[in-house]
Length: 238
Image 1: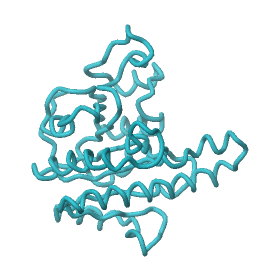
Image 2: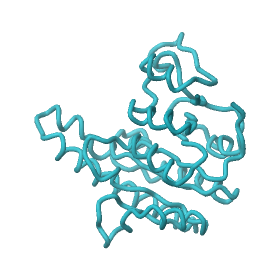
Image 3: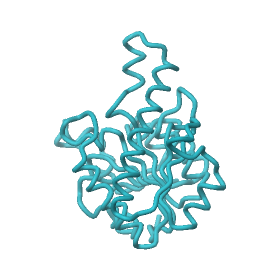
């Protein structure tokens, strides 16, 4: 599949990406780096939507394992994503990048309610749109939120930012013999059980032919190179 200079993208960031080396909380230096990368692709003319996880603050599944009701834990995780989104908004606006945060759980004092047509209009007006609180319902991950919002916004690609430079046959941090895929199909990802995104998100992208590119967020400038269509990371497609 030929890559291209994408005009509208959805960027999926994990909450852990904001935590830096500490592994929890929000590292302002990391936040500043991410904001610079987003600003660079924004200035290139690409319309940017963002979904951020909340794992650096609260991980719903872990709460459920310890006996907490799963739905309650997931709602707490959604609120954690709101905090991350507000932090990212602040970092971007300090760099003169206009943003809007839209939340699937209504909290008008902090963010706009999620309205699809309004979000698209923000993108058309050259604003970065950050989607908070997942899809507003428990049992759905922020990966699934990213896939859903990308399709609702009419994005050309879903960019999955991780700590490695693509999808490997095994965890490259644990297995030095792991090899990286340049391209891989959705079905192969599901059949091989590769931990790229959860199966619901992969299936949504497969059903709607939305390509996914997995790349290393820690590699400075990688986000800009991906958006320009350069061959980095791993492309997941039909």
